[in-house]
Amino acid sequence: MESHEEAYKRFYKRDADGQLIFCGLKVDDILKNLTNTERGEPIYIVGTEIIQFQAKAAQEALAKSNTRRTYAIKANSSPAVLQIIRQQGVGAEVASVEELKLAIESGFDPKDIVADGIGKTRQYFELALDKGVSVINVNDKNELELLNQVAGEKGLTPRVGLRVSPDVESAGESHHISTADDSSKFGIKLADARKIYLSGDYKNLNLSGIHVHLGSNIKDRTKFERGYNAIVNLAEELNAAGKKLEYIDFGGGVGVPYTPYGALDLPTSEADKSLITIAEYGDILKQQRERLNKINPQMEMVSELGRYYIASAQLYLCQVTGENVKGDHTHINTTGNMGQFIRPALYQAKQITFPMIERPGSEVYKTPPERGPDGGTKPAEKSKIKVVGNMCESDDIIALDCEGLQKQHKGDYLCFPTAGAYNPTMQLANYNQIGTCGTVLVHTDGKAYLNEHPVSGVEYMYLRARGGSTPPELQIESLKHGPMVAYARRITTSFDPHGKNNWTDTVRSDKEKHALAMAM
Image 1 (tube, one colour):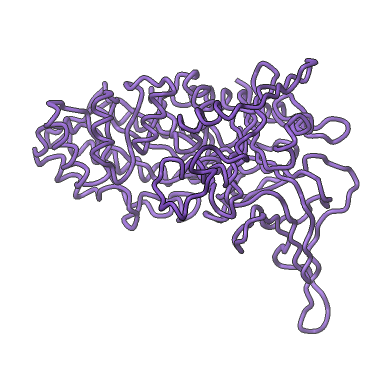
Image 2 (cartoon, helix red, strand yellow):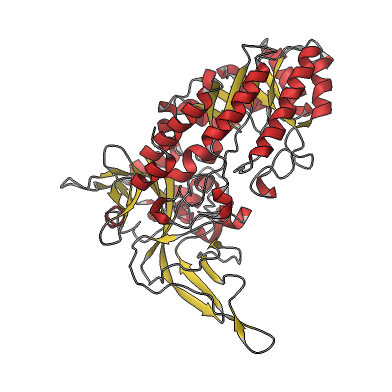
């Protein structure tokens, strides 16, 4: 199998004119063939081949420990993405009743689904039991008691695991995405978990598993080693006390570089240089397999990678609308926003950006030198170049520290790589009525598909209001009787760069639009 660095040089290229080519298609051609309504709006572009490559690399790494692969749907729940991942032989990890419904509708076999999450409800447990999911991992004692009650009512004995917190501090890239220390809302303390396993309570449950998830985008292998060693230590202690386990779910958390594996010769941060590879992660799991074989050679091991499969496979693009220079500070204004691309604002994620069209010899952004106390100047200690969004929020910043970025002009497009995890699923449709952006899928057949349409804030409000009850004097006629006029979007099927009939445009009738809205 080729290395990540070799593969990503294929996935990301530039032609002789400096145009970005993503998974074999010129990005500018994709944008030009969007409808007038969508052209200029932000867009996600995802590559099927990259998802397939990441899945194959994970398969090779996890095969060393015979670890079962599942995909954390919360990372990116696009139906097309789910189909691609399912076709790679990967199961699903869900964290809510709605994700469970989506996984089943997407064709995942319930026996390949792991039901996780926090604050689980009776409805969630009933559906998981009725569908016969592989395992249910509970987050705390309250969930354990509720599941025991629901299982008893149904006369079932599901396989259940406790989510255990091994108290590994700052396992994730930042404290925002670290989930395994005692201050986190996730999981049960080791000592408390030990008592629950050995209590003999919960007669309606086959309490035979351990679940752990240390955090997200972990780049330090010692965090994995410490956390996993603590969990396997618990398994050994329970075995010695006569409690036999059947499976350990090791969660996910493998990090990915913000620069897509050195593609386009983009500068690599020190954090990315020290990134644990998927092969090294496989070695860590192999070490745990060797320990577990001593207590149960049939012990099932499960992984829940999410970000690793999808993050590097997706770009976010938005159009530059101008600059706002305020003293030493330069704000590059765009049509993008934190509502569609939230990780930099929510987690202070270090997002890089580069131009869709590279113009050799172009001027670049530089922060002016600072004036010292003696009246002289010195290089600025911190970059004051930012890419900002169009939402009325001070934190609506898409990329910080954009020193050296090629100067942008109104109408240019900026690209944000490694955008596929969490950004698409955490989009805010309501704020400023801006709505969500569409997604183009670049498939292995050489075509691009607009498989997810943008939804404006007005359209979203219609969908929310259509089933509601409102006093007559507060009703809006268009919401009362049918879809808003704005819902009349052009429907795009596919763009074939080698064909004569590219994007196929049709306009839905009011009846079709209303039927679609009712089905959503």
